[in-house]
Amino acid sequence: MTNDTVTPDADLALIEANIRDVPDFPHEGILFKDITPLLNHREAFAATVDGLSAPYREGGVDHVVGLEARGFIFGAPVAMALGAGFVPARKAGKLPANTIDQAYDLEYGTATVEIHADAITPGSRVLIVDDVLATGGTGRAAVELVHKAGGTVVGFSVLMELSALRGREKLPDVELHTLLSV
Ligand code: AMP
Image 1 (spheres, rainbow, N blue to C red):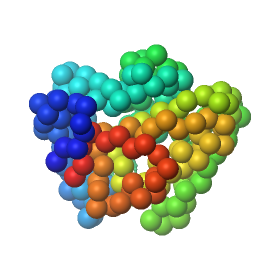
Image 2: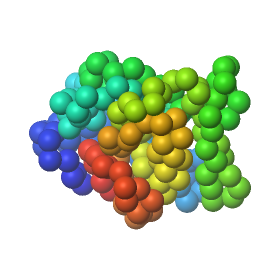
Image 3: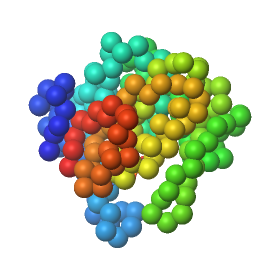
């Protein structure tokens, strides 16, 4: 099912056709949305980067924050398309210099995301990018990280929303842009 109003329907259909469902990965009961066929299809990959960037072309985005790991793959070309810098938000312990961090809840336990403390200029406009919005925990943590760094979140651009997991309810204060909703 598609729900983007900016991207042509033919592009959304091409994107959707190149996302592979893998049942029971990485755990039984999870239907994994595998984007590797999409990355390897040049028109579908280009249409995805266009679609994720389109609403923000006039928005004066200073930084794009990509969420490890698949948010890096989409976030970097989105940053290029918008003339913005790219900031990787990584799992704890991966970034070499001083960081700021934000913990969030998982189904069992907690996780932490980090960015470099000097990566986001206070007062700057930030777009967050990821491949899948599931429960919204990762996205919420990224929004809090940007706020801690003194940035303004202008949007959260996501390839696919798994709407049954109601992640958008964790992001009521964020302009959420999703290309596909299933
Ligand atoms: P969440 O914090 O629950 O919104 O999960 C979002 C993160 O987990 C994203 O970075 C996704 O890459 C990944 N993710 C969660 N569920 C899936 C799924 N069914 N298929 C692919 N990736 C997923």
